[in-house]
Image 1 (cartoon, rainbow, N blue to C red):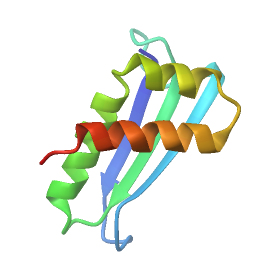
Image 2 (image 1 turned 90 degrees about the vertical axis):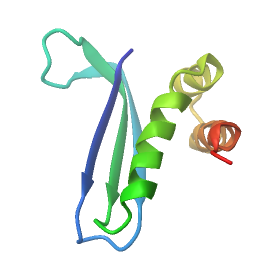
Image 3 (image 1 turned 180 degrees about the vertical axis):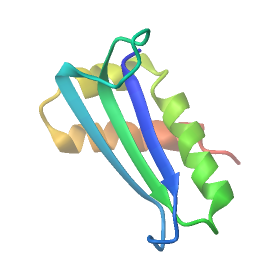
Length: 96
């Protein structure tokens, strides 16, 4: 579906960090069978936050299955709208 998630746990960071980027043209992510990547998440977290780190990766997968979020991410030129769509979707998926 044009999604890539680059992630790592390292002790060079003190908390979880996430970045998102969109490429309208697409990026060759190095997999011949996967096609171009249009949505890229970067996630980094310290080794001590294993559960939180895994939760973020799972949430990204669930969020990107939501068509309304993908439409906002794909068509908006407003970075704040992207952040809001991801944040609101994450809240709906949050474990209780």
